[in-house]
Length: 192
Length: 192
DNA sequence: TCTAAAGTGGAGTGATCACTCCGTTACAAA
DNA sequence: TTTGTAACGGAGTGATCACTCCACTTTAGA
Image 1 (cartoon, rainbow over the protein chains, first blue to last red):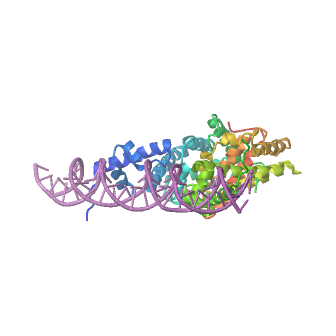
Image 2 (cartoon, protein in one colour):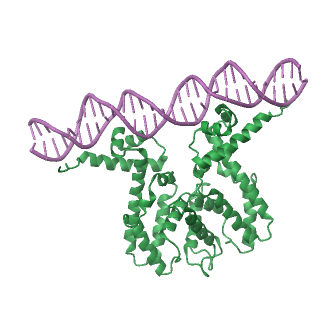
Image 3 (cartoon, helix red, strand yellow):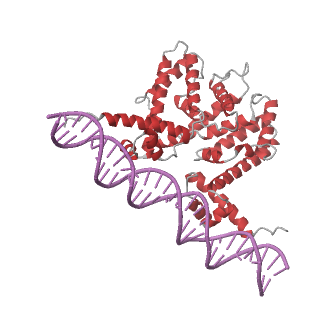
C-alpha cells in the first residue's frame, strides 16, 4: 500500500529528457524524431516513452515547463516598485524568448491551454493578472484589456516571420505597435 | 521549335488540384497526405506530382494563389472614396479570411516570401502600398508604419489561437488593439 | 548484502508518406 | 481520321516515424 520512493535514475532521466527535448524542439522544430530527442538526452528511446507516453505528451510537457518558468519571472516582477514598467518588462521578455522559435504554435495546438492558463492552478496567469491590474490602476495600460488578450497578443507576436535579414528589427517594430495599442487611448477604444 | 498548345485537360486538372488543395489544407492542415488532395481533386496522385513536383511546391502555389486574390481585393480598394477607411476594410478582410485557418504558418515557411512581397513583381504589395500611403496622407494611420510591418501584423493576428469557445470574440479584441496601435499616436511613437 | 520490482535500451513492428514508373488514355495537329 | 506525344492513374518503392516488447540493469528497502 505504501508507495515506494521514486528511483533516483528515473527522476534524473526524466528531467534530462525534458531539457534535451526543449533544446532540440527550439533548434529544429517539434517535427524532429523522438529518437533524436533520446539521443540528445543520452537515453534510449524506450526511456523517453516510459516518461512521456506519446510524443504529444512530451511536447505538451516541454511547453508547460516553459510556461511555468514564465510564471516564475512574472511572479518576481509583481513586487517591482514601478508596476507600469514591470508589465512592459515582462511582455518584452516573453517576446524575446519566443522570438525565432520554431513551432511554438505546434506546442500550443498540442497543449490544453485552458488548463495551463487557469489562475487557480497555475502561477503564470495568476502573476500576469497581478501585473496587469497594477499596471491598469497606474494608467500604464488600457483598462479594458484582459489576461487572455495579452497571452493571445504575445503568442501572435511570437509568430512574426523572419521576412528578411532584419527579422529582429521587424519584430521590434511590430512589438512597438502592439505595445502602443495596449496603452490607454484618448477617447477610449476606437476600433470596435 | 514551335511550342505545342497546352492540353485542355492538363490546364483543367491543374486548377482543380489547386482549388482542392486549398480546401483540404484549410480544413485539415498542410500535413494531409498528397493522396487526400488528389482524391479531393478527382485526379490520380501522379497528376498532382506532374503539376507540382514536390509537396512543398504545391503548398507554396496554394499560398501564392491566396496572396494573389488578396492583391486583387486590395487593388479594388485603391480607388475607394475614403482611403482612411479602405485600409481598415482590407486589413479586417485579411484577418477574417485568415481566422481559424490551420497551418498558414507552414505555408509561409514553405514560401519564398521575399518574392511574393516584391512590389515590382506582385500586385499585393503594390496595392497595399498604395492603400497605406493614402491612409497615411489622410492621417488615418501612423506615418512610420511600413508594408512589411502590416503584413507581419496580419500574419501574427492570424495565429491567435482558439483559447475558448469565444475564440472569434478574442480575435476581434486582439485585432482592435492592433488597429489602435496602428493609429497616429499623440506625442509620436512611445515604445522604442 | 540480498532481492523484488522499477527502470532501461534499442531492435523490431506496422503504418504512413512523398515520390517514381510505366502501361494506358486523351488530346492537338496534320 | 490518323498519329505522335503529352498527360494520366495508381500500384509500387524506400524511407521515416511513433510506439512496443522484453532481456538486462539498477535501485530502494529489508
